[in-house]
Image 1 (cartoon, helix red, strand yellow):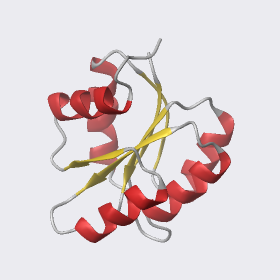
Image 2 (cartoon, one colour; image 1 turned 135 degrees about the vertical axis):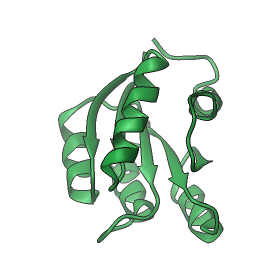
Image 3 (spheres, helix red, strand yellow; image 1 turned 45 degrees about the horizontal axis):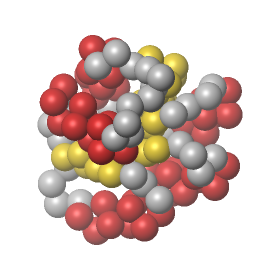
Image 4 (tube, one colour; image 1 turned 90 degrees about the vertical axis):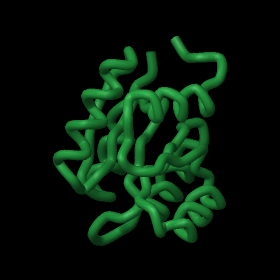
Length: 123
């Protein structure tokens, strides 16, 4: 079971990801709608995996990814993106993100993405 942090400025998307992560047998320890909440949650909880929205008001997901990974290089981050954001995906991967998913996110697509960053699972 992974401890997961969900970061997305959309409440609907956060709720959907919380449901999917739970259905996959992992624990959502926190969710955040912006950079400040994400950094705060990361400092309070042992996080194994972050799902990170690329575009958020204020500080974007690429910068937030860099900030989290500077503090904890062991955390895996899967970027969540829309079509047309390829440059930001490349920037995210250069910043250290472990992978990315295109919206809409489904149970299967998130499960596959998690298996790619944790190929041997995690207990």
